[in-house]
Image (cartoon, rainbow, N blue to C red; front, side, top):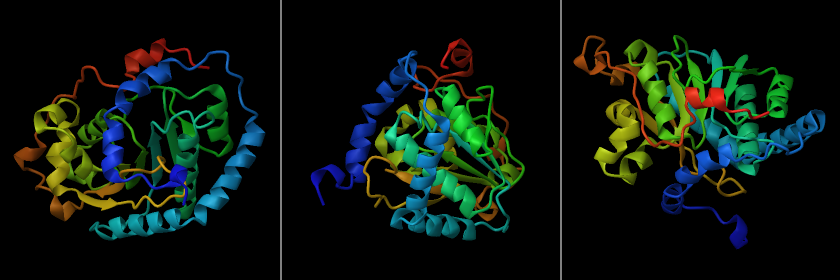
Length: 275
């Protein structure tokens, strides 16, 4: 195998993440306004071809086995009612985001999930049209991943800022809600080892609090193209592992706030004019 396609180890990926968070928000703000829109029909055909390759890949087959293993860890056997994807990125303009989109589309089809909702503040009109062509919905407002659920829901947040996952957990900070979350996102374990706790508390407090009760299933990164699915895991929260409903652990807390994070806030989103 050539150097170009050699797998990136978790250690190397963590080192890269120390640089990337400072750049992601800047790059999102710097998207060229005069970039030509894509041919949506042609792009959909290209995406379908990639999905065909994805569904037959070893990575996808192993990933579905891992997701199934995580679901078996849950006490209640339920079907997914919906899929939500936050922060996948500009997939018509970014190679990694395109492959991540193909993965989650194949996952949706694998589990026959009827409802799929997407949001990323960097989506252009053509990217929205692509998703609509796949019968997916696009959020019109930036909820910052503050999305409460009452049914089994699959969330896909590939390489997103920690504060998005933190917001999602805060929004479901009750055992009867937490048990319905199935997350495919950055590894909690890797996050907990990446910085001193006092720093992690700035944008990941709820992640750290739920960590002892979460079950993590690592997605092995043997995908043929590197730097696409690094350091991702499936996280579930079995009801039998969570503190009791009346435990002080679930006491109501104020919504988390952040300073100097790479997330585009709801307020900032209203000021953007990405077409």
